[in-house]
Each structure stands twice: as structure tokens, then as C-alpha cells.
Length: 347
Image 1 (tube, rainbow, N blue to C red):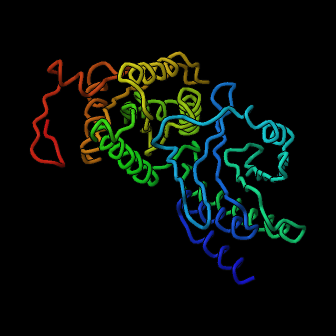
Image 2 (cartoon, rainbow, N blue to C red):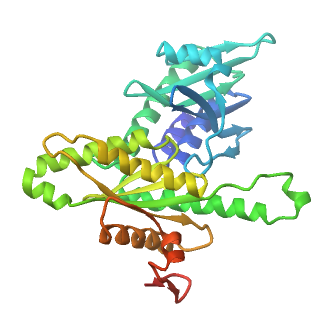
Image 3 (tube, rainbow, N blue to C red):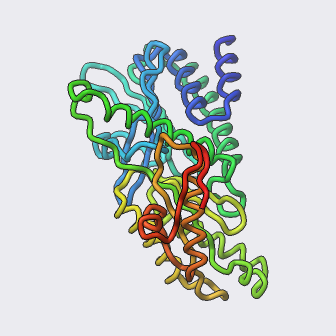
């Protein structure tokens, strides 16, 4: 009992999803004396669903922590796990598979609003009876409720996108993981073991053009509806592993995971076109301006954010409804940047 209470205290003592996940699978691994336990991300891209391992615990030690906010989409198609796929389709809370050698694999989908984004996996538990199952169920209820509270605190109440206070943590993770990948690329060839260079990440700032006019002409109720519809278009235009933020007012920020420069420009501009072509009720046509910059993991976050802001300012000052890339503006002479120190640029 003392051990269970200790784990419950630890589970509810974190304000970080990774630490929360580590706590819950550590508790389940110890409770069932499992061979190992994992946290799996369940991600749907188009019509395909992927299963990606995020955290692995074995013998009380963390063996793997993959950062979904900074790494490229990986994992296996869920079809590789037919029992899991069938159980999720049937909305089951506990899914089991028994191998030919008698080893049991248990999956515990975490249901939120009828969807599964996270699944816990317990491999070959030694202690697994009715009492254990009841304790597991109690731990999962606490975990699910606390995860929902944590998620709610990270979301903008109007649009449901990530809020501004969660941006720093997400951006820091991208910078940290990207710098580690860069260091790997600079190692001697015999040490790299044919690791392919990672594509860069991108930061975009977008602003709704003439949004004050919308509020003044149609009222704040329709202005709020425009913000909600813009957020919906963001979700449908970007991948689940990209990070979407509402910074406040009519400003949004996007952290685009690894992709080539031309692809990044195309993705941002495609979203701009989606907004331009969307029929907003009562309001009619709405446009957005987008400025974006490459994320250099060895530069301060304020400098990267500043470059995206400068590109956005140029777009809004030169016709609006445009997508502008900072480096292209500098190369063309439209922006002149003079580096004064390691933390700021003057224009």
C-alpha cells in the first residue's frame, strides 16, 4: 500500500507529460513485476495510424525517451499489432495478447473524448490477478484525470490550440534535440554509423490581416468564430507532430518539424491559401500573413523568434496575404540584418 501511495503522489506531482508518463509506467512495472513497460503514441496521419514508442522502462531504469515534438514521424503501422488495432476499434480499455511461448502482452489505451493518443504497454507481467487489475485501474483513472488537467492547462480556452506559456518548453525541446543531432553529424564518420543528417525545423508567426476591422464591423462574437475556424484550418493543414500555438489576439505560432526549406515554404503558403479560399460565415473572405525562419539550434530562441517576426512584419507592410521567409528577404536585400552580439539583431 505504501508503494502505491508513493507512486500516486509522484504521478500527481509533475507538470510535464514525459515525467508523468515515466511515473505511471514505473508504477505499473513495479506493481506487476513486468519484464518492461512502454508508453506508446498513437498517431493518425491521413488514413494511416502509427504506433511509436516514446518511453521505455526496464528494471526500474528509463531506457528510451523519444521527443515527439522534435523528432520526425517514425514508428510502425498499427496493422503490425492486430490485437491492439482490433481492441482500439472496439473501444476496449484493456487488450491482451498471449504469445505461443506463454508470454502475455497487455495494452492499456488512454481514452480521451473517444480517441486514443496514448497507450501503455506492459510486457510479460509476473503478478497479474484480479486485485492487481483493480489497482491498475485505479492508477489509470488518476493518471487519465491528471493528464486531462495538465492538457487543459496547456490549451488556449477559445481555440483549443497550445497556449503561449507552453511555447518555451516545446521550443527548448526542439533546440535541445536538434543540437544533439547536429553534434552527431559533426562526429568522425566511423562514429556516426551512417546516421543521416536531420532536416531543419522551422518557426512561423502568422497574423490575421485586418482583424480589428472584423471585430469593429461584425462584433467580437464573429471575431471569435474567425479565430476558431483559423485554428481548425491549422489543425487540418499541419501534421499531428507539428506544434500549433495561439499567442494571443490574432497571432499564432507554428513549430514545423523536420522538413526541407522548399517544403516548409509550400506548407506555410498552402495554409495561407486555404484561409484565403475559406468562406467565413457573415465575414466573407479573411486572409493571413506569414513570416517564418529556420531554427538554428545553436542560436538563442529570441533571435530565431525575432527573424520570423521581421519576416511577418515585412509581409504585412508589403501587401499582406503573403508568406515571407527571413533568409530570402535578407538575400534579396529587402531586409538588412547587422549582428551586434549573440542575442540580438538590429534591422
